[in-house]
Amino acid sequence: FGPKPLTGHKLLLTAGPTREPIDPVRYISNHSSGKMGFALATAATQMGAEVTLVTGPVNLATPLGVTRINVESAQDMLDAVMDNVDNQDIFIGCAAVADYRIAEVAESKIKKSSENMQLALVRNPDILASVSALTKRPFTVGFAAETDNVEEYARGKLERKKLDLIAANDVSIAGLGFNADANALHVFWQDGSQQLPATDKLTLAKQLLTLIATKIKTS
Ligand code: C5P
Image (tube, rainbow, N blue to C red; front, side):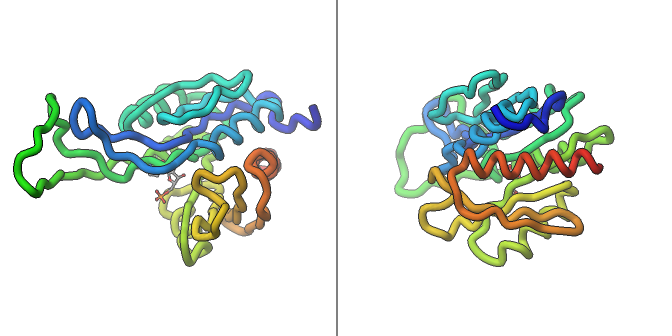
């Protein structure tokens, strides 16, 4: 129970890694566990929001009351987000989207022959920037996993991707961030910032969503 500051609000979020196919049996991906995104989905539901979660392949159960859409590649994730973004009040991009995909996916399994091989990659679309570029857009929130110059890079992304708010985590701190159960965030917006000290991801998710709730009330 507790306060429900997101009652009547619709939240769309992305979580987990994306998988970029190489051929029918192989892919490139990353180590995102999806835990932060799923914690946000859980917390937002408890706070009264109607939640749609677009997720890459992860080993996590669907939080109670959440509408889950499973995707694999970045392009699939973008399509699912664009299909569901109308009438959303808040969008949070929490997924670790692969920056590149394979230029030409092989139709059958690639056989090993020579000692070396090269894969040509092309840039994936930026899902978060695509949402913030919409004319009728939700309150748009991004994440930034940085190892150094956290504030500078986070503020750069806030500006470049035209976000309302960005939550940065310092992934160089052992035991926090990627794959861990705990995290710490430094949140930035146009004219302010707030530090959310290290705690479990569900508590952190509630703190971040409480901050977002106060921002959408005044925006
Ligand atoms: O630029 P960078 O990848 O560090 O930005 C991270 C933020 O952008 C995250 O919120 C992530 O979910 C989002 N993102 C995205 N689509 C991409 C790359 C990143 O939505 N192709």
